[in-house]
Image (cartoon, rainbow, N blue to C red; front, side, top):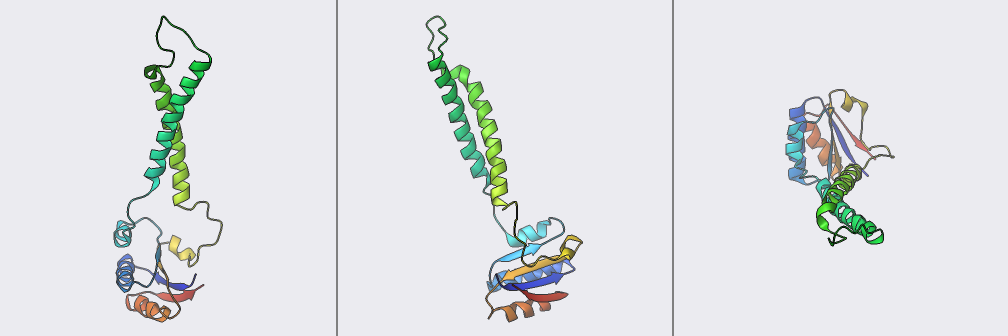
Length: 166
């Protein structure tokens, strides 16, 4: 990945630079921030998370498995009680619910790790230790011919340091 990294000391300058970069459509933007800030979330407008899909699918699979396992067990080891049906859905709702919660929760955790790309094995391009101590970084992945325009734009918006990265 090739791009340009801008180092900002002020949040407002970083937000303005991100707005200009988005208008210019140079490429994907990554922001490094010491703490989560709603201003950055608003300007990046990432959209809703996809973790809920993992939760929904895991919950549906869990409730299906919960009912299936209870019915399977009662068919193989029936407990005949006064002419009532052996496999009835009403008493198995508790088992279905509990397995739904278990599998839904585990799939939510798996979805969280998958969507956040954890664990990160490789080094993050453009990261600087100063971004954990109060400064902000804006990384723009752009073509080599657009790199000089990105550098000028970041400097014009108040970046204290701008450099090209590979």
